[in-house]
Amino acid sequence: MKKLNELLKNFVYKEIIGNENVEISGVNFDSRKVAKGDLFVAKRGDTTDGHDFIPKAIEQGAVAVVCEKLPAEISDACCYVVVPDSPEALGQIACAWYDYPSEKLTLVGVTGTNGKTTIATLLYQLFRRLGYKVGLLSTVENRINDQVIEAKLTTPESLEINHLLTQMLEAGCQYAFMEVSSHSVAHRGDVKPHLVAHRRVAGLHFAGAIFTNLTQDHLDFHGTMDNYRDAKKRFFDELPAEAFAITNLDDKNGEFMLQNTRAKKYTYTLRAMGDFKTKVLENDFSGMLLSVNGREVHVPFVGKFNASNLTAVYGTAILLGQDELETLRIISSLDSVSGRFEPLRSPSGYTAIVDYAHTPDALSNVIGTINQVLQGKSGRLITVVGCGGDRDKTKRPIMAQEAVNGSWKTILTSDNPRTENPQDILNDMLAGLDNEQRKKTLVIADRREAIRTACTLAQSGDVVLVAGKGHENYQIIGTEKFHFDDREEIKEFITI
Image (tube, rainbow, N blue to C red):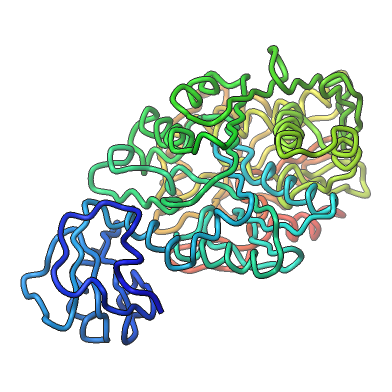
């Protein structure tokens, strides 16, 4: 139980009507879950508006309501707090409700288009092996030490984040590593006018932040690349002075991210001069030999994008006070992240790779890495790729171009079509190809059949890349989830 005025300390509100000393027994933004004594935060969604459910929340026992506009009828049994931004208020209230758990451990956030999951997960692995109790909030899964908790969003809702951080503290965690999506940081000006800026990280205290890269994605939400970029930058703008910010100098937006941050600034790079610099000495499907700040280390990862990710991991560990040699020793034995350049070997001599690449840049990086390893060899690349429905349509033709330009054969197929017609999505992808490119392309809407065809076409020395879904073990068709795992499908066909 907390008094309402305790929850209102750290953000600006416009007006309070009623008793601000009322006792609160719980906080909810879903009116269906409201119980007697709760505080209900009314916020707009993309399809519904929580303000429409204020009467229902009060009927179910809410004693206080946070809202951007007052309802037509005011109840004497309820206190109303009018705020300029309900999602921002919810984030601040969530932190206060759980007694500010992010201030009691070392929380590091990772943002960018690609590499967030890999970096956050590898940091979690590294610090576990260094002997610490550690939490993880990621797209693939959430973890409290070795306990796995299903992840539903890249960045959970603010109440769930603070609940998980509290559980981490109770389990003795000293560190937590977290993916920070642009959706979770964005303010209203960073998204399309009719959509909601979720502000899920509002109120959290970050000890450090990492920027990976910025390429086209989520324009269905942000509208423009400038908005998308600015949402990422906002994460760094809001860091406290005692935090550190480490950015990828090889990305054209890397330095821009740090322009207005109060945090201590650091850089990592493969190509320039930075605080943490890595050079790729050798690269094949078994791993890479790297020189990291002048020290050689072999890692079981492939590709320059992974070399960059590992440099960010190394730099962050050093900034968190870890020993350089011990950090490199453990980095040399870290495990690959599920569905991120995950290889499966065929008895007949070809390699299948499952990767989450679902943006043009990520797909280009993965294809480029495979072709670099295949250079001078007789192997060919067969790429299976699709695009998600109800998402950014502008990247679909670009995804097809990236796949076809770097592959011997490309098979366009369904990803998660959601409520769109799968053929419409494929037509959008095909629109990016000229007649010559289409001659190298097959269109097989059924993802299972597309994977089977790729495995049938593959010969010894070839590589089959199945891109887009990675760790996901489902396919969303309409509004339903059906079990589907690219890795399972490959294992079934890989011996054919």
